Amino acid sequence: MSARILIVEDEPGLVMTLTDMLVAEGHEVDAAPDGPAGLRKALKERYDLIILDVMLPGMSGFDVCRTLRSQGRDTPVLMLTARGRVADRVVGLKIGADDYLAKPFAPEELSARIEALLRRARKEPYGPLERFEFGDVTVDFEHGVALKAGQPVPLAGKELQLLRYLVERRGQTVSREELLRSVWEYSSGVTSRTVDVHIAWLRQKLEDSPQSPRWIQTVRGVGYRFVP
Ligand code: CA
Image 1 (tube, helix red, strand yellow):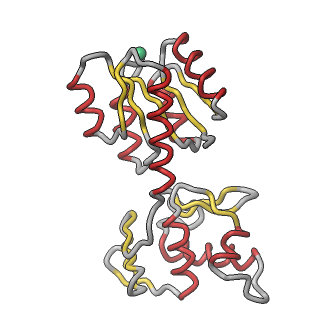
Image 2 (cartoon, rainbow, N blue to C red; image 1 turned 45 degrees about the vertical axis):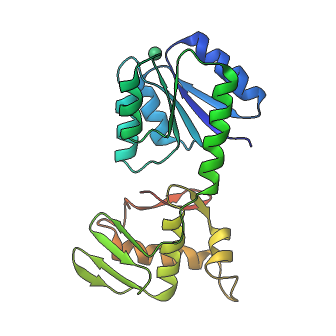
């Protein structure tokens, strides 16, 4: 199971050991040497897993994790805590870390935890949604009703399906081809232009500034992404 993993850790020796191990297991590895750099990367790039040290220069691993979660990023986080600091583990799990490992640890143990987290993340994608809120918008997919700032927003069937598809995969880039296949089922006369037009309508109706959308973002050359 190959994954993209970010290591946020300030001990170069440990970064090197972990990188070698993870690369040998077929993963793609990126690293950041301090809290702010780790947070920047975690917000900007897409990773399947983040290995996050607690004691970091600039910003603690707790703050990095807390900020990620407050921005709606649910990338699995494995925290590296100091040995015997039970309080660290409790705090870590409370602020949204998925697992923790006390230093020093055996590489095999880290490897096993990583595989477990990746398996769990892959088995539990966002399920079908009945209702979703973002900004001042509430969408009731079940009944096909949307409200923006308390006012009803009429959404056509395809707009609703398209929004739902993106929201259920929030944080992921979805290609136009995938949308054509899944939302339009390759109906005749439908082209990628159709997708773009429907996206524009959704932005008109739901975004505060449709020209520079906050939620429904364009991924140039590929498609779209709902950014939670
Ligand atoms: Ca450290």
